[in-house]
Length: 363
Image 1 (cartoon, rainbow, N blue to C red):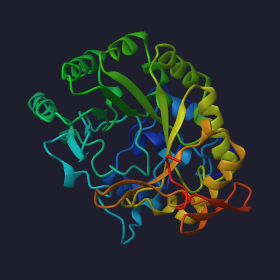
Image 2: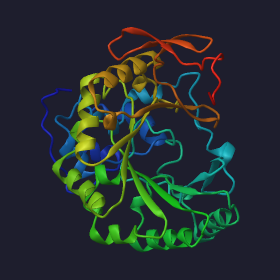
Image 3: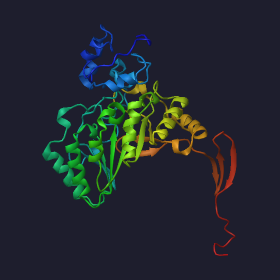
Image 4: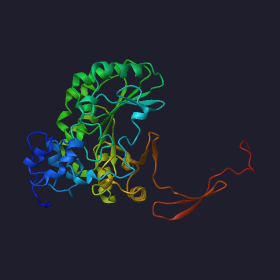
């Protein structure tokens, strides 16, 4: 495919391989080899994602995130259907409770877009995964009878595809629980469907508990004027904004791209939160960078960007053992409380970190 192929904005979301062929996103004659991909993993691109593309070509960092590829049919031995152990920690349908003080509530598995690297790609887009009224009640009841839960994270799928009425009802129910002080949304919607961020939606997010919105964004080309306007509407309403970015080969595994993204986010009043090492979902190996390469990128960011712009590089340990920071270590050597530290330029420095045992603390 030519990188110069122009991008035509569709009037509505495209959610099938046939629609991609009809719109010229996938060349005619190549769709046959992509049918097995469509059979296994959902497809959906919004008009906004087309506005963010520079060309209809896999080398475009937005195109690569959403348009199916035959690379997805190659499944490596280490890849898994449930790479982060959602099912291991599912207490009732829609609830993943992995950490003592917080849990995931997944009322839907539908999204406005389907990322080709999604760690839940085996389930997203499946109608039977959405919670029924009875299943949602059971999920909310679990939260109510688990007083250690301080924070509820709405994920999915994408929780912001729910109607304002349904979102408001869920938030009211959670906010009635005095042990829950924080409600966090994980969402792509402000990035891929910024028109959804209306005054009515913002009003629905107003509740007793503190509401945080964490947006998933991977490349600075995604931050169009419409997206910035949507983010500003949330920020102006006093809703704290954070970001999640997945490190993706061919999309953002470049220090200049990551630096521009993080600065653009902070400029938009979004605090960079996580830089995720790609989970081992089936058929995603063509996006995966090595941890060593990720650490080099994070170290390069440390030297050139403000602390406000620094995300935490994390890995979700397969099997459901949780996230751990995997950024570079700046401790080169340690011996009895004495350290050799590496600065952001690569220089080494001695530091005496231990207390002198010959000096009394009260002397």
